[in-house]
Image (cartoon, rainbow, N blue to C red; front, side, top):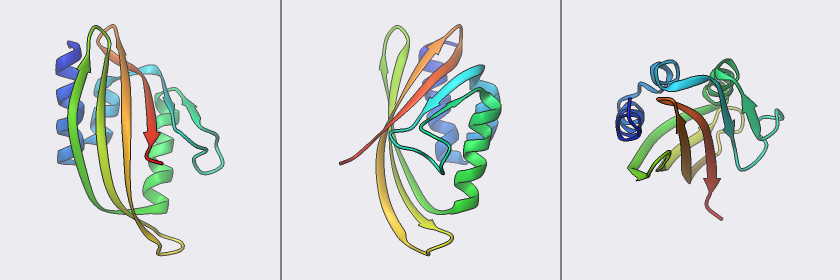
Length: 122
């Protein structure tokens, strides 16, 4: 897949609730995911597709997602693209509801996503 095809499919999957299927379809086995902060006491960086699946498991087990907005993709040839996410989420334990925005930057190599980085609004 090309950079543009991967970018469009990732965005479509996020809009249509196919994030999990796209992990296996679009990501390299050795992909790295880097958050702007420690996520659940596991640190900011997660290595490998199994670890990224685990990060999704943690998020889904600790949050209720009430809505997601996805803007993009915004490509930066030859190997990167960005997506803006807006989320309305609720912490399952505290029932605290919050609206979040973040920018995600993805790096592609050999037809797969090899790195994702998340940047949060201040």
